[in-house]
Length: 219
Picture (cartoon, one colour):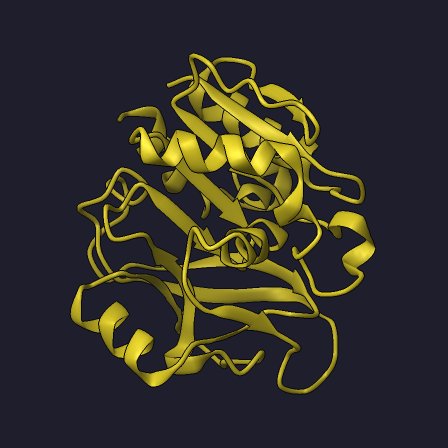
């Protein structure tokens, strides 16, 4: 699987994501600046975490207007895969590729700590290497991770089995229905708030997040 990592001003997790891709895929991902528009030959586009454009206006709102995002939408429409983590998840919701929004954490504090996620389904390209119902540890680092949507949207996500991960311990950011990550209807786009890329090697303190990238590598 050929992957690229998008780089916006203020993004700071692109190197972490590149390590995860290199570790699992055995290939070097392309790093693509947000003003470029060529995604030719790619299977997977990754939008990493950080603070795109300083998180001014709303988190991800300015990045969603960058030239590259029109190309990402076309990539998705062609059936390409898209992964957005933390700020990447925010950018996906702001660009309309995923529903809902990420609001300020319930306690209005930046959260930087490990959390536990429960895998809600394992029949997708992102989750096939997890066990059904598996609970795994992953770091979170965000100030705006409170996932919200209207009741009809939340019911649709539940009814269509589009919730990818839920918080399995304390729901510290207040996300509706403990939602930590969601899929698009065709399961080719995944957005989640915590950072599985930061636990893919024993030197990082564990490999809990590696199954996500191994799932993609085996696709």
